[in-house]
Picture 1 (spheres, rainbow, N blue to C red):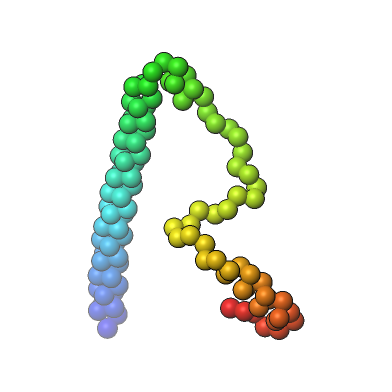
Picture 2 (spheres, rainbow, N blue to C red):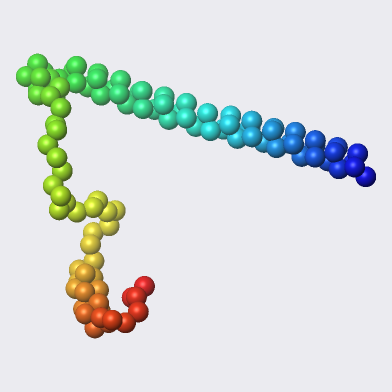
Length: 102
C-alpha cells in the first residue's frame, strides 16, 4: 500500500513539474512577443523622428515633462450619460444614513 502511494506521489510530482515547465514556456513566449512588439514600436518611433524636418526633429526630441492636471477626467470608451451624476447625487441625498446604493 505504501509502495503504491509512493508511486502515485512520484507520478503526480512529475506531472506537476511538466505542467510547470509548459506554463513557464507559454509565459516566456508571451513575454518575448511583447518585448518584440515594444522594440518594434520604439524603432518605428525613432525612424519617424528621424524622418521629420530638422526644426520639427529638435522639438520632438525635447521630453514633455509637464504634469497632468490633478482634476483631469478618466478616459472612457463611451461618452458620459447625461444626467447620470445628478441622478446618483439625488439618490444619495435621499438615502443619507441608509444602506449603500449598490
